[in-house]
Image (cartoon, rainbow, N blue to C red; front, top):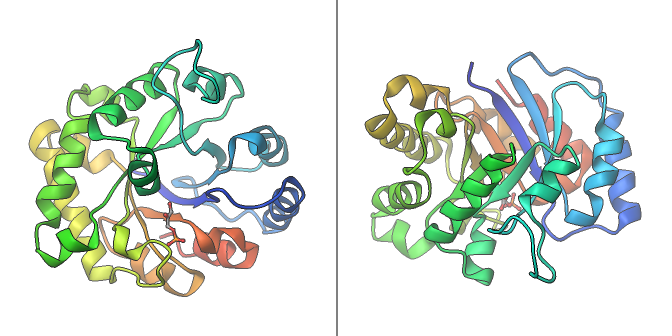
Length: 253
Ligand code: 13P
């Protein structure tokens, strides 16, 4: 069954003490998740263990890393491997966030390698895609985003693909307060699902969760998530405020 997911992406925010306090606040929320609903919290690497400890035993709630390196281990000072993340029993890893693509030069080919190694170690990648404003204004967003999927994911077997979560995050909507409308999100998500179906068949495509990201807030989450091909959200700024993220969780369908 396709999962509905409210995912937090803390990005590079919060001190250790603030992270602890936010997790404690989130834990005060009554447990309301249905069987097909999940919460995933992507925290900075130094807080993975804290988040795992705090959230263990919390129903349908998981921890994510925000990145991993392409290699298994070795002399790569400062990098963190999928194997390390998996060894902490962290379940998810965000891959290909637009900020990683933009500031760290992560190409579709590099992201194919990261996806492979994440899957090899049993992590579930939350694979991000999305177009910059110029591409949207030129009307070529569908081809652009389909290409991201093709170059990073289409070498996978159907079995591997079903282990992936996709997050569509239009770059012009990230941190700008300018959310895509629910119609724009639905249109792109349907296009992404069709793109997956053309390669893997409709049944596989229907089993993949596709999240929307970009200025999701408590006030707009339920509307965006209500669309048939929108299976939840990947949330930046609003996930740093427990009450906001709580409202977003409640917006899952
Ligand atoms: P905002 O929710 O702050 O726009 O960020 C979205 C995002 O990049 C989540 O990964």
